[in-house]
Length: 382
Ligand code: SF4
Picture 1 (tube, rainbow, N blue to C red):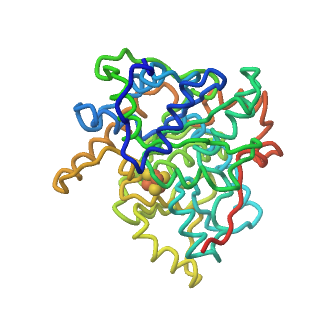
Picture 2: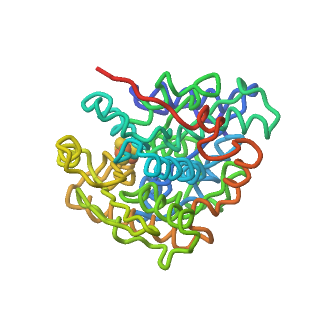
Picture 3: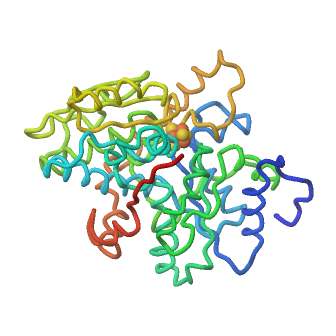
């Protein structure tokens, strides 16, 4: 299939990344492992003339197998793992008078903004790596162990809705496995190009499931792709771990649909957890101001640089007409929540593969191995 592709595949500015993927897929001496972010599966359909927001998770996985990837894993799995680590970190900070409010750290554009413009607040950032980077570190360690492979033979590829993820993968801190944890990052549009140029009939593909382990996910991991999703996923798990009780309603509407800044107070046992969800980096200034002038009373702040979170990321299929943008983003968002509702498991701590990886490999959240592979530090950037 790949050998039949003769014409140039990509615009010159994208050549590096796509070309590297192509070379890896054609190299019999390497093992390719791929992960896709949650938002990719509600955007990809649009580049094949399908309905906006149509969920194509199964077709996307089949297409990746047809392209020749040896292992098709899922960023949604490490989104669930992020909740275990980040939720534990938040609880620890609250119980031990650590630096609060804690900021989410899965959006590299937001992290870079703090490093560059607000470095005095860098200790507020969660030390958790993003799900992309957690997956990369695990592919070349746990994944290598499971498949009895030499880590240096693994080429780790991610497909993201985001161009900032390319920068994130190249950060020198992101090589906990001994080499760059994520070797190549493609955007959703670049994956669509690969599929088209390989002549794959995407619309008519039979859906398939990701590989196990490192592939199972819950609804909580999936909603990372939309503004408020990380917050909701963290609260679903935090509530149950702290109170030992099931949530009355798993849909925490108070943290959804932020149009800029959305504040909510969620009662978790005896603690009133104060949250802020910021959608769009342009809206973060008043929150930073409150923290700096000492009036902030919140515990946890989610910031996503894009206006609706990753579903509206710069690597997603383009919506050229501004008049259509609102509708398309609404379709992608509705699709995210619909998939969450139809999944059998909707809380990260219920993911059986997350339980398994802690039992077999990581030990416990915030444990020694987790710190080594799943956490990072921040540096001042010019
Ligand atoms: Fe990337 Fe935007 Fe998502 Fe941030 S919000 S991770 S910049 S797509």
